[in-house]
Length: 625
Image (cartoon, rainbow, N blue to C red; front, top):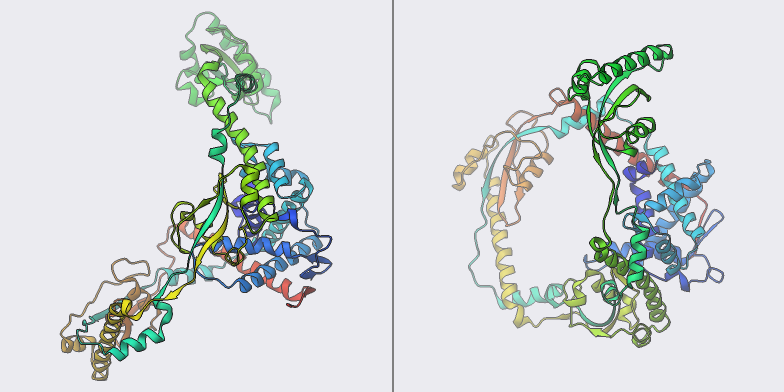
């Protein structure tokens, strides 16, 4: 079930998991300062109150997704976050009303697979405890959140898995996907404008487009950096600790005994147990032949009913004890080298087993693994310390929002500084986009400490603004040449458009693009029929050709116009359209296309279902003050 959840997690479920896990651990301590007992709800869904902290989780996740994408509307983001939390609650309540449930075992197994709680690929109880503690969350609260997410995923699958597609849908998909179009086209290149640009036009453009001629907003920050690498460098485990870890992990450092075996199999049929005595008798007769000195490999090729190994004289290669059925393994590992077993019964039948080589168990010496064990101890101790200090950093920077001094003193960290940087580019700490995003947060710009900013699970920053330089207009003289270039490009494009307009106006009713191309002194292009995925034509031309209407009569469509990014004018005409079919499509591709369409249909049905739930839900939203 859990693998199915991971394979099929999408839409609302994927979002919920991100919000429940990724965001909380990127924002340590946020719950420590929220008192639900005194907090008024911002919305009510049915009998469930939604608080500001619920909305903040989603809001912070939205901010993380917008890093490096420029300006955003904070109020709009918060409205969207509230709506998403409301929708989540509506879905959860509907799932509960339908009697859906998630077992404790499934929740436990899912949590244990999350990488946030693992060390060396295994669930780490101590890391789990520390991470929840840093959030002010109990295990019961976190389990409840995960249970809710899995419950929502159940409801999603119950709706989206019912999506289906018909043969008509599949045919329509391939009609469009494999459609071919034939066109002819000509290109009227833009001609560079070399004339003078009047001063009044330059000034007017400058005044009308102030946003184009501004120095970017900049800040410099002071910051504290908590680094897992730096913490690890201070750790030095004692020799006794390393030896204790060696003893603890000895089983993992031991290569188990292996044996190279050959066998002869006489199969049995579970539906006819009365034949077992015959198979056993046959195995005993073969053993007697071997005991008299017949060659095992030769007899195996002749008599073994395991045809694959019989070709190799019965050889199964080296095996570990836990790789075979217990009866087979017990017998094989009880034999000495060269010895032959009595008939051994397994679910496949009766085996005669011979051990041909022994490879004893071996354990790596302490000296061989000491350095690696020491490194693991340092890493583990540093991670624990890292999370503890991260909680302290959160507390100190929150309790003293106007300075970094108390947090620096509590953690024995130095306050560092950056040079000025923009929203898109910085050096040192500001080279991290998450740090830049935090620095330009409205609360930080107003003089507050930032929330802790976690980078890759190994660094945590807290920043505060040292200097803020708002965006400012550049002097006209400094951007004059840039404006002249823009205006010349604009005039060149306008001239190209006027030329094309005149050519089209002069085209006779029965005129062709060939006539127009001849009059304009350019060549007419007639490419081979193409599909939507062709790379032999400019992408804008391909897109325009497939948006153009079908010709009422073959070769009789009116010319269409397309303006390329560089200003060139393209005139084209659709000559013919040939729809795609499913006739020559590989059956496996058809199967994949059917699954794709079903999945899309299921997602659309689920989205419509959720929207219907939202419209009919009993929701109260507190008016904005």
